[in-house]
Length: 350
Image 1: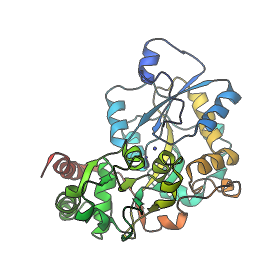
Image 2: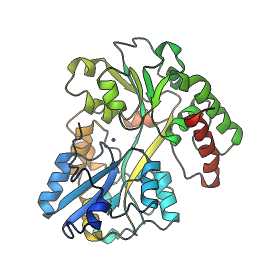
Image 3: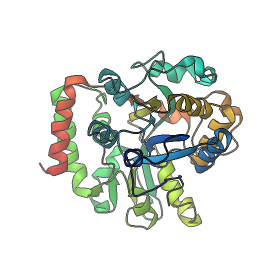
């Protein structure tokens, strides 16, 4: 997750969060409040939904699962639908943060790829979540600046690229990259593996990074500050869409060692005031023509919706085959503390 993602989305009342809007008493009906990753639902899809159902979508964004979860736990509610990755779906189910899905209201569940659904071991019957997108973060390289490189996470160990690279400010993504590079599962609970990943990042990768960044890496890449970024293809390609030369020079790849994949899902938050409308939105997304539009706009393969694959008209930045060596992030349970300690060491110093 992800997201996981110029803002092309209808961010209404940008100075206010959805919770603030509700608290002030505005828009008490015919509004759907969505909390989603940046760069993750096209304007055209939102606008179609608004027109068909004669409603207004209030769209707020987050840059990482950790940010989303912290905001919700701190009382940032008022949202109807949220888009967590699988490990956080599991956590949110356990903490009673989600409403049950009424599958009788969803006619398009039949379109979801069973192979993707089988990966949702945290909620295989879609009791609390409906798959939105299955993908992975990778690496984007400006080949005009970096003509020779290996399609490996080892690129972040290159001192000749120091201060021209960023990685996501996302614990499970970056730790997962290091674990995969070292030959370990992204879900390992072995303290020695986790410590080795921490040390690799601190000693080999971090010294070459400008920063950890989950929000502005696309813009930084577009303006030439960064030549190599770990992140989401759709974010960077959206930012450079008007730069034909940079579009030609940019290569995206999922490193050969694999790494974390994400399965982001649509979930209805406990206490939603618009549950029926939330179900309508979830079902709307999985109409094949809508899902195909979503995938085409972002250059995605239509991983989660089978009939949408026949309706896609555009190319994708990567294919399902590029995800073969990746691994979904699981809920780590108590072992999450080991990752938090390692990440704290990385983010604040050795």
